[in-house]
Image (cartoon, rainbow, N blue to C red; front, top):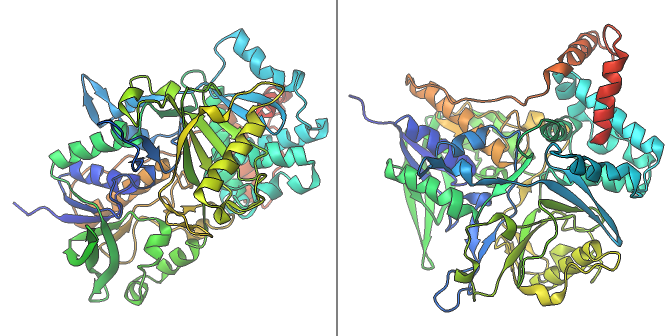
Length: 566
């Protein structure tokens, strides 16, 4: 009998928990060290300070909204392995939305389906895009954009990775030569649904791949392309997950800040120094293990890369460069005295200078007893994501970074109201606002400090992303900035990276364990022949031309019409 190998995981968010999940299944000894007081990392939900009254629970807050597209395979596979009892798993806590609302300043909103229409009425509702609403787009702009979507659909994977990775989405769709409506709706509006991307900087390879996945999700009958949790994240996902792993031996520590990685013999990590904070008192502890997995955000790992690590693996210097590609995308919750009906899904506010998106959560939390939270008067939560902190607002003319928390709330309310209170219809009024909660990662100085920025995809950064393994023989990386098929800072990317890191650990330990399953992005088989044709052209150094092999114009016409819808 050999003693269990001890794996130390630095970071207890989705990546760290996913790695722990797979390692515990394979009988490793696992310890996780998480900086925050609450498990879950950027996916965590929180308790709003001083909100509990009369013996009730605190109101639930969160770092940002949750979004589980249909094409997610890795994180949802893990959710299916977390039991809840009565034959159910955490995966059963995902609920489907039906539509995406696109709201505009002082103009009528329009809607896009989040799933394949299930009735004639739904088809008519979404076809109104061309029939009754003036989007400000010319026929030329619609045609040109559909041609670009068609090009993405029919380009081979090699062209995407080697050519489109170096081209920004803004450049690919030639946003600069078209109208403001084209820029707002088709350039910025669509990329906001990706959360971790900006139209001006995201690579066409990554932005295009994910946009196609979302479009294919909608085109396929069945479940919605947009799913969310049916309650606060930690209640319905993180806590049940952590509990079942702790019952199997996982040791999970909070308030733990990794401050140094120490190497041995210019070959491997010897130990890490962790600083624990409790009741305002800090103490340092040396943590040893057989293998170490960094599941920290890119900017956190970058601070720990020292000369000893670089001497063993010089490519870790790329992490320092990649860490410059972070931006602010943080959550704000507005607690309402009644559940305001905005729409059954996410809303994109395309004209808002702060790039707001939101979801009204109460309608999806059917088993949540609101009377037991806060002071008992809250009936709904409008959860908002603020994605642009560097543009001037419409109320104070200030950047979000330069506003006080109260000014941020008032500015967001103004931007939401101008988008929703249109054509004489009043959706939001101040009487609805009970209280609010700003992400606790925002330190309310002026200018503000963000303790948890998010990695955003920029063109030509694929080569900077590390593999899940390193030349440091016992150091692995399981974070959303690892080279993955997802290639985007998401929960899906974090889970996929964790699976890759665990596979590398299995190799390094020489154990006869089954490798973790890793999935590629899926695209319809019918497009395979087009991608094959383009691959032959790409190998010969020829550009994409979009012509069908064997001359099948009817199929091309049909698929182009589908492309035009998205």
